[in-house]
Image 1 (cartoon, helix red, strand yellow):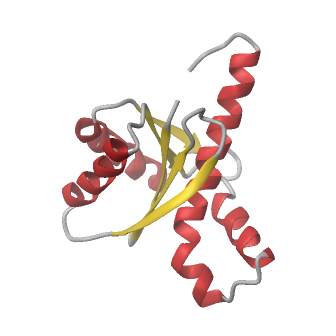
Image 2 (cartoon, helix red, strand yellow; image 1 turned 90 degrees about the vertical axis):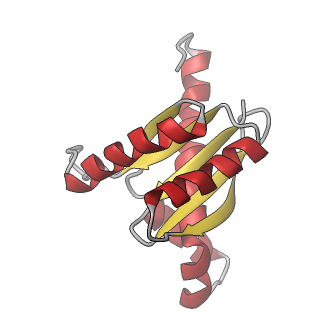
Image 3 (cartoon, rainbow, N blue to C red; image 1 turned 180 degrees about the vertical axis):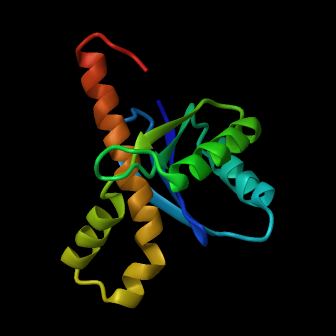
Amino acid sequence: MRAVGIDLGSKRIGVSTSDASGTLASPHSVIQRGGARSADHDAIKLVVDEYEAEVVVVGLPVSMNGQMLQAAQLVLTEVDQISQVVGVPVVTFDERKSTVTADHLLMQNELNAHERRKIIDKVAAAVILQGWLDRRKEQMAQGQTQ
């Protein structure tokens, strides 16, 4: 199952894709936010179509204690808008610490702050998507599906 992972930000959208087996997530691209959300959603749809994705996984910013704050509500609103455009199911996945994890991975590769800033969003999207893929695999092993 191919999937597209999304890390929604106010200035940039990180995009990741999975392999055909739905095992491994890889960073794909960073979409610079324009004026209209519809243009951003159309850019996401292009990736979904290009990779023939069956699902879009959007990171949901939940607080460390599990509460959904205003940022999460904004993401849920945008998830509804994206789902009307992409033509495949759009699900959310807890993105706690995804950017921190992505930054740590990039620092291990000895990238400076400027280089990290350019790609951190798509790496965070890959961290989110990989978490969802791993959870899905565990659920399938236990006889559950999503």
